[in-house]
Image (cartoon, rainbow, N blue to C red; front, side):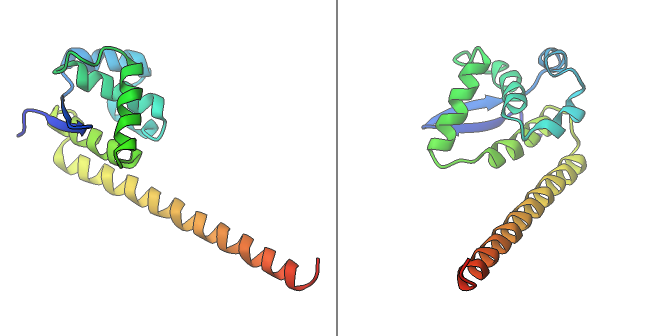
Amino acid sequence: MKPYEVLTVGGCEYNLKITAAHAVSLEETIGTDLITGMEKFPEVKTLAQYYLAAVKTMNDSIKKVEDVYQLFDDYILGGGTMDELQLLMMDVLETSGILTKDTNEAQKKMLLGRREMLQKLSEDITGNLLELASSQTSSGK
C-alpha cells in the first residue's frame, strides 16, 4: 500500500493522507462520517475540507481552507478538473485506510455513471432547445 497520494500543482507536489486525528476533525467539520460526506464531493466547500485534512498531515505550506481553494484554482488553471480532484480524493481515502479498494472502485463507478447521465441529459436538453428554436425560426415566429 502506498504511504500517500500526490497532487501536483504548478510543479509543486503535495503529499495527501488523512490521519485518524485529521479524520475526526474533518468529521466534526462536515457533520457526518467520511463515507457519507463523499456524497457532497460535488460541493467545492466539502471537497476542500477533505483536501485540507489530507494536505495538513504532510505539508506545512497549506494551513487553511482558503489555501486549498487557491490550490484548486491553480490546479484548474493548469488544465485539471474538479472531477479529477474528486477521484484523487477517493484514492486518498483508500490510501488512508478509510475505503477499501473494492469500495473505492464502486464509488468511482457510481460517480462516473452520474457524470455520464448528467452529460447525456444536458446534451438532450440542448438538442431539444436547438430543435425548438429551429422550428420556431422556420415557421416564422
